Amino acid sequence: MEILFKYLGYIVYAVLAVLALWGSYCVIMVWRRVSQMRFDDEQEQEEFLGELEEGLQSQNFHAAIELCDGDRRALPQLTLFAINNRELGYEKLRSRVSERFQQDVLADIEHRLSWVTTVIKSAPMIGLLGTVMGMMGAFANLSSGEKVDTLKMASDIQFALITTACGLAIAVPLVLCTASININLTKMEDFVVAGLGRLFEDMKSILGTNPGKSA
Image (cartoon, rainbow, N blue to C red; front, side, top):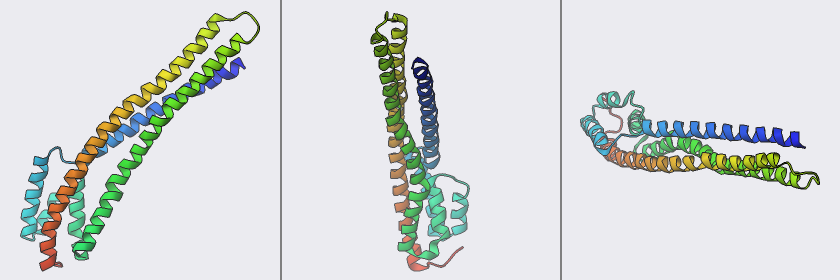
């Protein structure tokens, strides 16, 4: 039994280590993804939109495409998609751009965040499992009917406390990181929605007068 608890303890530590690494990896990937997808501030986006509007209002689509091409941020990529598919018409194009934003940008981020949430929930539970196992070992030592091995009992209780602390040490930083990511994600969505609103105002006038024309 003692050997079994020993190996189960190693498994608990290994699982906690895997959760810590996976949660950290997902947080880093989401953070990078959100940072890559949005403009740093509103002024930077305004500069982009101002230059874009000059091309669209003159129906110089090649200039607008060159402005967006190679820019991996969400708004330029969605703008590029809208310009390349302008023959679809205003209403259908707006729906397709919205779907693309949900599928290509938000869905990937939400998928990664769901894994972070899973780690946040799982780590304390695995830590609690280690706590229960440590206390079981301590009580088994007390109920053995022989002289109590205080060193063994102290080791079991230490294991119980360490696994609990490790579970919380994994979950708490990830909760804080997720909160920060959600704030940045909300900012990105606000920027993109505002930018798309201005884009479609320009596209509406263009498509309404000459939907098939290209420069």
